[in-house]
Length: 154
Image (cartoon, rainbow, N blue to C red; front, side, top):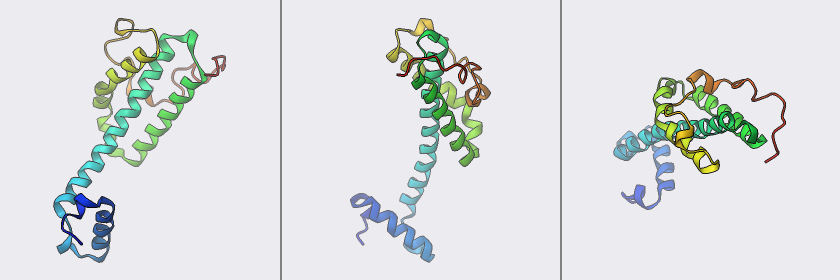
């Protein structure tokens, strides 16, 4: 196999590295690129957590700041993001200490989502995230989320 397989055919490279690991042939492993890829996997998990938190926060803000415009879509998006975040944390418990920092980091993305999808602007919304970690992960928060499905079917 060519020595630059990592650059020319990433999938073939992963198969080769997996085979070498299974065989215990550590001498032929592409250690520098393996290290880079493993670090990248960890970063991807953090990024997925941030992305999901941003969407969750944006939809909670829309829910709270535009109660008259609530939709089934907003409710379901909140539920989906929470379920996915909880699954991600269950599969990667070492991400839990990162939650507060991630929330602070992505709050702006949540506000941007609200600004994009509603007539609300920055001055209509809190400067900092109004939700605690517990509230963001609580399947029953806010209390009216799962009550009386009177919102439109958008």
